[in-house]
Amino acid sequence: MTACAPRFRLFLPALTCALGACAHAAAPGAIDADAADTAAPVDAAPLATAWPVGSTSADWTDATRPTPANGDTPGHAGRHLPVQIWYPAAGSPGGDVLDKATPAAGGFPLVLFVHGSSGTPSVYSGICSRLAALGYIVAAADFPLTSLLTDGGPSDWHAEDQQVDLGFLADQMFGAAVPPLLAGHVDATPGYAVVGHSTGGAVALLAAFRPDGHDDRVRAIVDISGDSCFFAPTFFATRAVPLLAVGATRDLLVPAPNNPVRAFQLAGSPAVLAVLQGGTHLQVTDLGLADPTDSTPTGLTDPLAQTMAAWGTADACRPIPPAGTEPLLDHDVQRDLTAQIARAFLDAHVKGAPAGLTALLAAGDPRMVLQSK
Image (cartoon, rainbow, N blue to C red):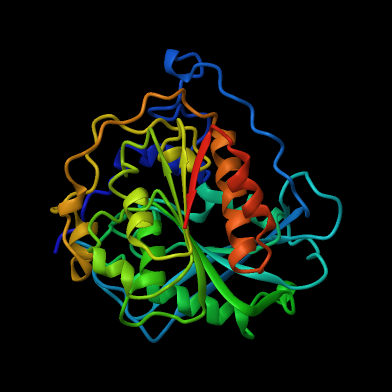
């Protein structure tokens, strides 16, 4: 088996810059704020925050499971999972994320975030810190082999292994291995939620619906533009886990009709669909990048579809629907809207507080078309 070229290979220089490996380099494909199709972006309403945000890290290895070979890079024992954690901090809301800030009093539910192909937690700090400000402890690992930092280059092969990684991470966060700073602040009572983007969204769906080896502690999932067209209809009927599927009308890499919309339609209730009008695939990250116009969405021959072949075929990945023509959402607006609907959904299905979700469903925000069942 050879390593595959990641679907986002055009953006590796920009991703590397985001991790601090270059300075002042122009990101290829960066959004031109003066482009005609941006129209006049609507400013986001201020994101209601309840807490400032602190950040810490952990470095864990699951010694019970191996990491497979990656092209010419040999496999090895153990799965190394460096983790970044965002959490509600004490003090007044707002401001920058503070390293090792004092946690807010009390316990908070756990969200495990799964990055996309060629990603790292660092390029999702915007969405993760937003969720932490809204009352969740968010832990995001560099997953083998999809992480940008993977020896031999990132690959979507064996992405299904990450679903088991999530259970290991939950064990660490709920147990004695949690960073001492957060001891007593991670509320294990409601189980945990999984939020994933792109390839990470496919992993989140596995966490919810995988018929073999699932973790009963998974209480809800948020699939943000996750590849799912290769999952058979019967896959979504294996278990009843609350699902929020988030799509974007201008997503060129994971078209919403074939993926988040289809997942919502096939899943049982409770489920919510949010389609961001003028949203793109890559603006969920911290990088203001346009989706590449010369890349093809996931199909039957792609490593991700092949590694998920146990749960269906890629027949629903084609034909590729045309992208929307709505004015492009502002970068911060897309992340704010995503965090708002994710928070409302998680509050309803993890905290048992549905008022925020009910209000959003009734609000009729034209930037975010919602359905529920």
